[in-house]
Image (cartoon, rainbow, N blue to C red; front, side, top):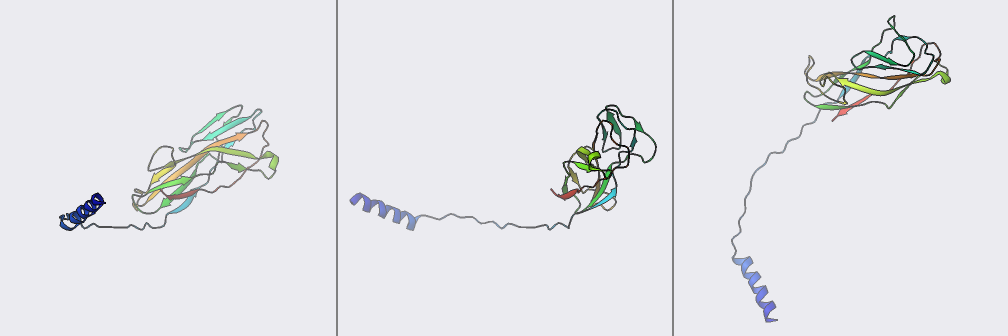
Length: 176
């Protein structure tokens, strides 16, 4: 008991007679509220004209607007010409943004058994100059814009039915 009493008296004396040392510094806290990011479609995707394949084939339309084919298919140069899907993005200058693309796009002639799928979608922001899903609003004429293009690979069945095919997709951008 005497040991406990001495321990509590020692703690009490240390608390009463110890010098307290402290320091204080002032800090600045700030917040930036970004303007709303906006996207606008500036051009539709078109894989151009091609012949009807006799075996399964694919056509890749790159983000830099070149076509490559595999399988028994001939890419034609007559209208309509190939073009990637293109967008413009506007927001706060210097802010990064992420692009969300669909996994695939179905294109149809109106007969579901003839549907084709566009896969392996990719984007190329002008600010990056490479295929990726991150861009930066760095500098069009207003200093707060960027553009990007979207390409992909069209899968054709053997003896794909001739005709015009259309489809739609949603593309999203958000600050990153």
